Length: 253
Ligand code: PGA
Picture (cartoon, rainbow, N blue to C red):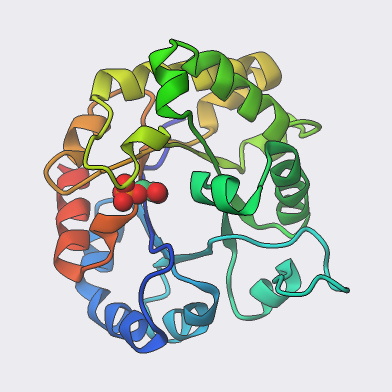
């Protein structure tokens, strides 16, 4: 089964609600273009911007939160639950981004609980993994990422695993302008797929795996030519409408 290509913009801690609304109102033509060309496109605004993007963007735009809590409600100050997201029309959540792992202590085991909670709510988790420069230079990328995948996917059935999107983002490539070559990205992503195959058999062929880390309009097409790379998770280049359009146009090519 062919995997549908996916472009997801990770806005991180950028855009106020009015700026997010402006993007939502301005992206209609490019979302139509993406849909006409059979690709999925989305953005992940901050929590306070989610509702305005839901209300003002075309319905085909996937809108993801950047985190969630695994509990439905309770004494978890500062947290946002899955039912809260669902009620405002959010069905996708990014989990385990390296910035959350670094600054907020997010672990693969914690992500596993969130992945299970999202799947139970019929939502789509986008599970991020990736190694530091030190790990990369030590030649330990594959074993490091294997552990992140095994812990994140622990206890899932093959049917559930198919519904998870994976994003491989080498930390040394995020926001640095030093994108991984397409060969490095493909090599690691193919190894992630073989880890998933060992866990879930043929279902691994249906799991979408994205590359992320300094993806720009002028390099996105390179990644898409690789057989295991199904799209991109893009930070900086997803913020401006022109650049977002460039990503879509070059992904489709
Ligand atoms: P970048 O961020 O595209 O700005 O490198 C990617 C990400 O962190 O998801």
